[in-house]
Every structure is written in structure tokens, then in C-alpha cells.
Amino acid sequence: MRRKLCAALLAGLMPAGCNQPQQQANQPVIKVRSAEQERLHQLDAINLAIGLKHAIYDAGYICKRIDKAGFVGEYKNLDMWTAHCTEGRDWAIFAGPDGGAQVRDCKDLPGTGLPDCVITKRPKGSFNELK
Image (cartoon, rainbow, N blue to C red; front, side):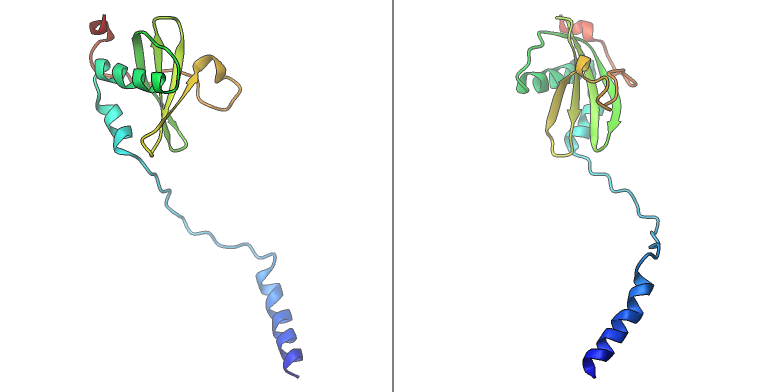
């Protein structure tokens, strides 16, 4: 008897739960940012070049001098920056909320879904002072 009652209850509950659209409340988007990400936005041209150059070197690449750099935009939870090195290479630097950075050659980005290396916000000051 108990088994029949449980089966009847379960059978009665199943149609109510299946194939019913669940209501989704307007859930806020949670954005995680690091202090390092925020600080990059506050740097002048010289200090931004130094920071981006460190990221490039830490990734195992070479950049003797940066003569142009700036903020590209946000990609997921990363801030994307770009730096042009005098050797002729352009780098995409992705700063993450964990304080780390990922570096990619800008020529490798087309077709990947990542943003192009186009500066949307330039830092204050001049890169010419780095000579």
C-alpha cells in the first residue's frame, strides 16, 4: 500500500516539474577585478610601458622598447591591453583578476574570437620619454 501511494505521489509530481520553463530572476552579473587591473588604468605612459614590458618578458618574449601602448577593452573577466615594440611586434596583454597576465602576439588574434589590438584609451604622457 505504501509503495503504491509513493508511486502515485511521484507520478503526480513529475508532470509539474518536467518541461516547465523555470523562471529566472534578473540575476546580477558578478564582476571580479583585481587591484592590479585597476592600477594599470591609472598609470602614465612610462609606467604603463614598464608594466606591460614586464608582462611580455615574464611570458618569455622580448620587447626592447615600447613606443605605443594602451587599453583595448574588456574580454570576459580580463582587461586587454596592447603594446607596440620598436622591433615591429604588437602584443596583446590580458590582465586577469588573479593578478596574472597572458600575452599573445597580435598577429595571431584574427579568427580566434579575441578582440583586435586596437587602442581605445591611451595613457597620459608620452612614450618618447623612454628613449
